[in-house]
Length: 278
Image (cartoon, rainbow, N blue to C red; front, side, top):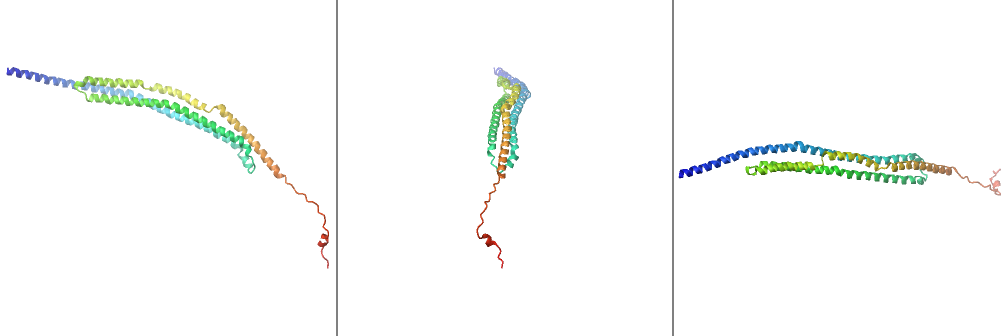
C-alpha cells in the first residue's frame, strides 16, 4: 500500500513538474511571438505613421512662415505708398526754401490734411493685413497642435504595448495580445483622425487667396485717388508760393521817396554868411 501511494504521489509530482516545464516552454514561445509582434508594431509606427505626421507638421510650420512673410510684404508695400506721397510733396522743398521769411503757411494747409488721410489709409490697410494673417494663421496652428497630440498618443500606445510584453506571463497571455491589438487599433484611429497632407494641401491653396485678400486691403481706387490728389495739391501749393513770393518782391521794390518842400529865405542869413573883408 505504501508503495502504491509513493508511486501515485511520484506520478502526480512528476506530472506536475512536466506540466510546469511545458508551461514554461509555452511562456517562452508565446513571449517570443509577442516580442516579434511588438517589434512589428513599433516598426509600423516608426516607418509609416510618424514620418507622415512629421512631414505634415513640417509643411504646416512652413505655411505659418509663408503667412508671416506675406503679411510683412503686404505691409511694406503699403508703407512704400507713404514714401511715394512724401516724395511728391517734397517737390516743393526748394520753393519753400526760396520763400524763407515769407508767410506761405496757408499754401500747404490742404497738403497737410491730405497727408493725414494718407497716413490713416495706410494704417487701416496694415491693420486689415494683420487681421487677415492672424485669422488664417490659426488654421495651420490647429493642425500642428492636433498632430502633436496624435504623436504623443501613438508614443503612449507604444510604451503601453512594450510594458505589456515586458510584463507578460502565461496567465496574462490573452491580456498581452489584447494590449498589443488595442495599441495598434488606437494608433490607427489616431492617424485616421489626423488632418493629414490633404488638409495642408487645401490650406496651401487657400493661402493664394489670402495673398490676394491682403493686397485688396489697400484698395487701388483709394490709393490712386490719394496719389492724384497729392500731385494736384502739390502743384497748387507751388503756384500759391510763387504768388506769395512775387507779392513780397513787389512790395519790397515799392520804395517811397519823401518830397522836400522849398524853404523861404530867412532875412539876414545871406548877409551873415558872407565872408568878412577887412
